[in-house]
Amino acid sequence: MADRHCSDERTAESDERFPSPDEYFMGLALALAREAERQGEVPVGAVLVRAGEILGRGFNSPIRLQDPTAHAEMIALREAAANAGNYRLAGTTLYVTVEPCAMCAGALVNARVERLVFGSRDIRFGAVRSKFQLADSELLNHRIRVEEGVRAAECVELLQRFFTARRRR
Image 1 (spheres, helix red, strand yellow):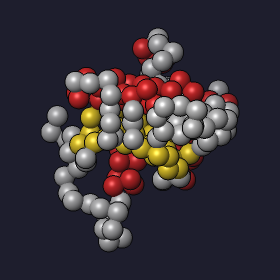
Image 2 (tube, helix red, strand yellow; image 1 turned 90 degrees about the vertical axis):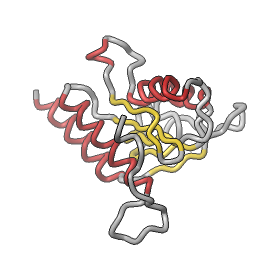
Image 3 (cartoon, one colour; image 1 turned 180 degrees about the vertical axis):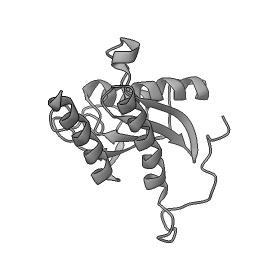
């Protein structure tokens, strides 16, 4: 896959003309979320990265795939594990537009993802900050570093627009 690498050497210290790596990869997750929306799915996108290389990507597809586990995060994890040749995904960061649910947060812990970056909270189902703190719970054997709010306004706007349009139907 030719576009698996971040083509430039952007760092968090980059000047303001260029987005930080977190903003860049969240932008890719947002593009995937827009694809989910085009397909009639709840607009959530996810990108899993290790050392600047995209290992997996996904967007919500439970309706299209007739699979209740086909959340953006799960699809990205499956693709990443296949690309890495390992179900353990140490040293990776998952970028996702919305706070993961309990199923996805548990899968991230089991996969040993190092870092989770999400855009907006999910007040109803979020299991990382909103309802539970599964990703970095001291009760579990692996804790994920969590950062929230990256490109949050865009993530929230996308979801609000989608659900507003749904209610009008």
